[in-house]
Amino acid sequence: MVTRARILARSRPSGAAIALFILSLIILLAAPASLLAETTMVDGVPHIMGSAEPPGGVEKLQLEEIWRRGGEDDDEILLGLITSVVADADGNLYVLDAQLMEIKVFSPDGELINTLGRQGTGPGEFQNAQQVSFLPDGTIGVAQTFPGKLVGLNLDGSPGTDISLGGDPASGGFAVLINSRTGGENLVVSGINIKFDQATLSMDRHHFVRSYGMDGVMKQEYYVKDQHWKFDASFTLKEADSDFVWWRLSVDHEGKVLVGEPREEYEVSVYNEDGTLERVFGRDYESLKRTEKMTARYDAMMEAQSRQLPPGSGREVAEYEQDLWGIHPHADGNYWVTTSRGMYHPPEGSFMAWDVFSNEGEFLKQVTADIPGTPGTDLLVLTDHGNAVMITGFWDAVLAIMGAGSENEEAEPMEIVCYRIK
Image (tube, rainbow, N blue to C red; front, side, top):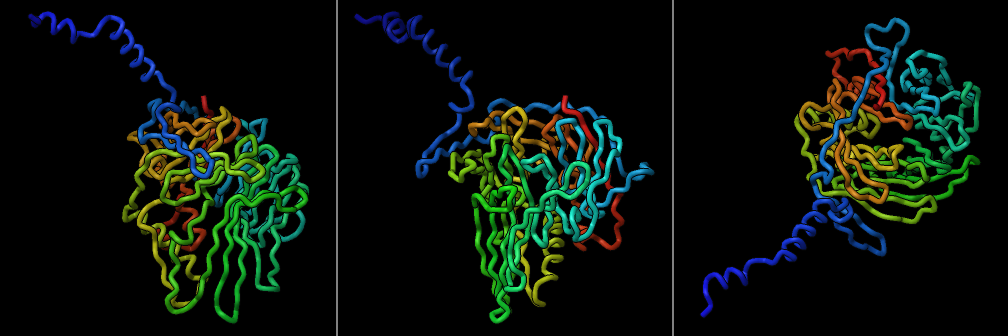
């Protein structure tokens, strides 16, 4: 007879089985992010997609304010529209003012030690500037939107080597430069080649991400998007169709190019310097639907842009935000990614949040910046040498420069606040 005790004895796991189960559980809980991510091969390229929740949890970035300049209480420094900040190895900050058309250089303790460049078309002068970056030879390149070129400046402010993107306005074609990035020896720019046909009232737009040599010769074209606009009675300027990777672009310290190609998908493509696609990484993410305030802001921007188009052109604002708002190759070798929620709706009590991925594309953790500021209005920029720089009122200033700001509201004076990452 099989007794109940024997049945229980048979069904009770042995000590070895229990030990194996506990060991398996420990291994699972201690597994690195790579074991928690799903990797698939698409045309021979690994696509690494993590889960929605950060495997390593959420960490607070330890920030210490060390100085601030501009604003109402600074009698020495007047800021127009700060659009770009980079730091050199000595901790000096190079701050591009796209309204005053100059670069202010601040020492590590916030002292104004130099002013570089000025508005104009001569050597070392620029206009319609958007970004500043260090070039592979150690000089400065100012990204001038139109005519599209990098204006070269030596660190003492004397003219350096200009890099033109080409385009012949006489034949109806020209180049627009939006931004530039340098990593290792790889100089990468993004912009648009535009050709207008007066006879057909149409425009061909070739959006590109390319690398250039210091001699001005194009080396690689990493990502493109082509559009054909015909300015007839039904033409509508659509934000989603006109989207490109301006903000979703970076170059890491090895010269690899990171591009957030789709607008409403959390995917980052990593290209080797020679143009080959090495991998794609991302995570599960639900696109952020815009609030009325957010929609009104972008409608104002597009209304300002549509003034350059034929009368009667329509406009259509996207319903959702782009998933990614920035990619920062951190000095620790990881990639810090800003999402739409990390920018507009960070965790409660935080100003901003980043998703941190390993160099291999594994989702590791989330990091928050718990400092005073208004998400989606102020901007926080991480530098390569241990600082974070807040630009207050950034987006309001952008609207004002575009002629899209409210006539009844006077913007607060812009201020930059420098934090040390502890």
